[in-house]
Amino acid sequence: MSIRGVLRGFGLKVGPTTPKTFERWVRELVAHHDTLQQIAEALLKTRAVLLCEFKTIEKRLVGLASRDGQVRNLMSVPGVGALVALTFSAAIDDPSRFRSSRMVGAHFGLTPRKYQSGETDVTGRISKVGDHGVRVALYEAANVILTRPVKGSALKSWALAVAKRAGMRKAKVALARKLRVVLHQMMRSAERFLPDRPSCGSCVVKRSMRGKG
Image (cartoon, rainbow, N blue to C red):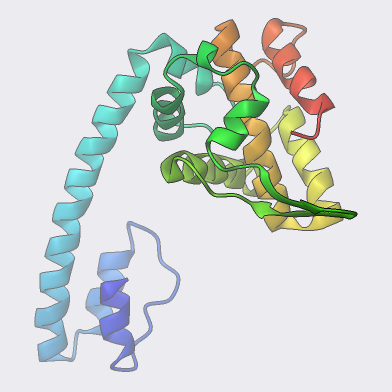
């Protein structure tokens, strides 16, 4: 984004690119600008170092996830990768400390605010209390489920129905709340997510679909 911002100041728009074509296209844009060439090369070198370090961290996270059976089970849910599974597992720690999966949503600020006074009963936006990192992770997982191809998942079908009624943004928040129920129940049962088979994993999904939470 820094590179794009610098070039935009000189009337040069990078536009849509891929990780493989980004550097080449930037160099083509600044080919006839000596000063911009120096700036762009310095920023591109910095970007290359950051990407290398990012891949190192990513590789370590994948390794940690692969060695943890509970995390591997959580990753069987569509949209839940190593980072989301590790984040949720570490935050929950012991699933038995929550009497019900619905309590997990309140713990991470994913339940709506309520205002009640006399005959007034107003339901507001989510409270956003608790661990911000977990909320972000669940929301990103929900975003992946809703915006990328996911086959054979009752979660996506349910969320798409919500999106038709209330819009995509609210559907993502609702799906994030639903995911915390599914993931917590999976941690308690030690079962994988198997939506297409009559197994305990699919029962987790079916049970979680019955309530509003």
